[in-house]
Length: 452
Image 1 (cartoon, rainbow, N blue to C red):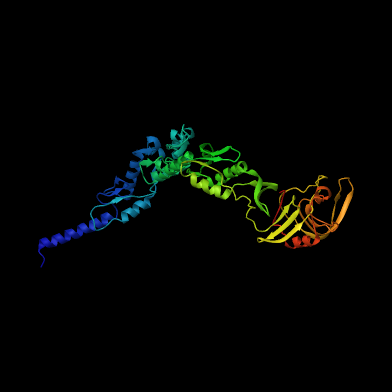
Image 2 (cartoon, rainbow, N blue to C red):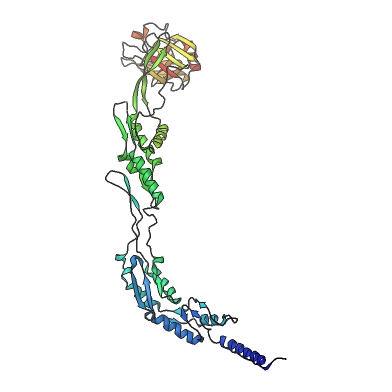
């Protein structure tokens, strides 16, 4: 049987438990902290009043960039604790197994006068646009020696009034008394002086600026790529980083080089039949041109070295008529025509060229077939102004109105006929020779005329 003492202890314990249970439904427990305010043994209504009084009597501290701080009493903003349900929920959530309360943080607990928040913030100098500055990235700038230096970043203090009002209202509703606006300010630049990418770009650009490429041209002049030109190739992207726009600028430079490096070819070597090497003039203007693709490739390789180069432009292969094996050869002095196909001579014939005495001499040079046709008429004017019209079976022009054709009205070919009784500039051939030539000649076959 229970002793009287034990019975009393049980009764007391039950009574205490009942009291605690009843008490816990109406009061916050010992050591209950709500948003940093001690609400021990307070009812919901008492806690509301204490929390409201506390936030209104507390000094609100506002922090901005550049170490600027402002303070004012919470009461200025007419703060009221309107969310009683949040307190009720906190009370109901108390742990019945413990005698003490806990630290509780409640959001959106208060209401504030939003117009007063905006009015107060508007009065602060930090919101004067004249006092604001945007952050500035670290950037590259040419120094007195013509190389890139990194200029340090500048920190900003920009802040949007509407954003700041909403930010402060939310903070006051949570009961915060220290509001740090730096988290919503535009302060820190995206690119700092210590940025590794910016340092790499500086080094890369400065290396290119040290590069010098001097071209020696056939005219004796020089054309130079150096820092004065390369500095204009530096571009900055929308994010503030730098690069050398080589893909656009090197081709432009090479195009200008091409204009200056191009030169007129006057003659070329040719292995004349029965004679050997001779110089043959180009019939039409023929130029030596640079190989733009190879020149662009070489420049892209050179510009990253930071070295100096003295070079000649890379030219396209010059026309080679010394080693050809398919061509038409006309010796105006010997009055003969040869046709070679794959190194084999398939035509060797006498001819009659332009009448030298009347100023119709056939010009020497290298030409190509314009077209060919059969059964046509050649028309023109004689030196005395009379008109002629001659029928030909085979017509192969290669230099304006000058070409190969049969001349059935001639009884002989070769020798010195051309000196006084030559053509109007064409190369006259026996009809059988004209036929052979017509059947084998094409527009890719060079026609080489020379005076031996």
